[in-house]
Image (cartoon, rainbow, N blue to C red; front, side):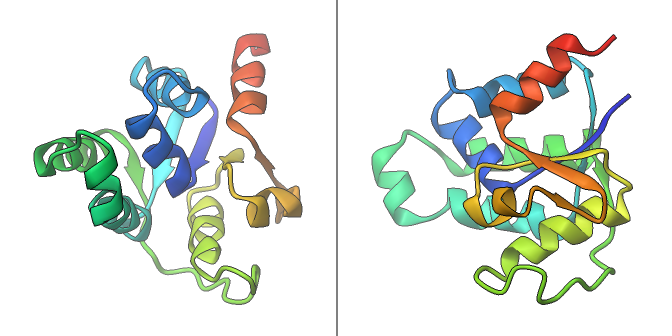
Amino acid sequence: MLRVVLDTNQFVSSVLVRQGLPAQVLDAWRRREFLLITSPFIIAEIRSTLSYPRIRRKYPLTDDDVERLVTLLEQDALVVPDELDVTGAIPADPTDDMVLACAVEGQADLIVSGDHHLLSLGEYQGIPIVTAREFLERLQTAP
């Protein structure tokens, strides 16, 4: 089974645009089509981002909605500790370093992201970084 790290933007997009590609990725995880790997940092970033006032004003999202997602992640994903330091891998956005650290710690096969800083790397320590579309195509063609 593929071991996959989703960048925070994939979770946020899946909640805000329920018909989008990131939502399809999360649905595939719920169907157990891959093992989701995450970390306390990514979970905290999801909680924080989905609590931004500008997001709450624009989308019908409650604290309960956010906590349901966080609880689901804590219970059903593989949560790896935030112990590996990859500081400086992406100088333009240091928070992206934590996504890379999670992937290395969790021995991920792929990172799925919509973030141009991550996508421009192409891969990190042999772990490919792909878009949601590319990931869904891989899932469809996997044996």
